[in-house]
Length: 116
Image 1 (spheres, rainbow, N blue to C red):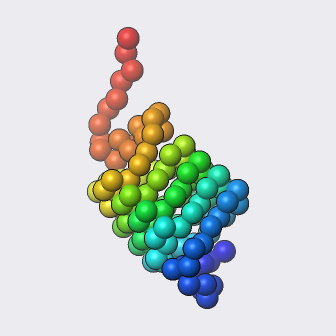
Image 2: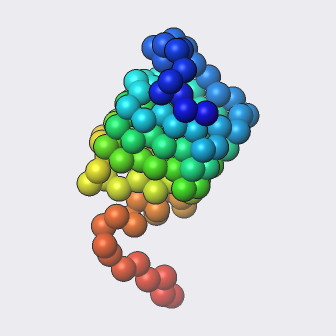
Image 3: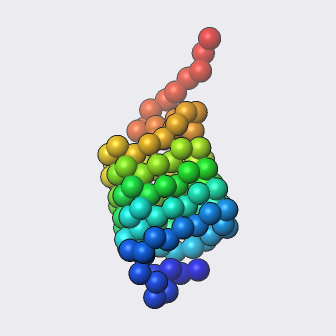
């Protein structure tokens, strides 16, 4: 679904709970405080969107696009497969948990070794 052409004001209390929204397009939308919990969001495009204070818990973001996206104070607890580069997104005070939060190092061009 291309949500950019749907005439729903996202300033409303929009909730996606246990929903498959894969391949959806949210480019440039104001999604502040949106609830996306226990969802499948594979291939979703969030470019240029504002997800400040969004609840994105326990959602699978495999191949989702986060570019120039505001993710400040967003809650990614138990979310997985996200690729978020801090150079191209605002992540101030966003909440992540381990071990998945290790993915945030992908954009840093570092080498991580697991040696005993």
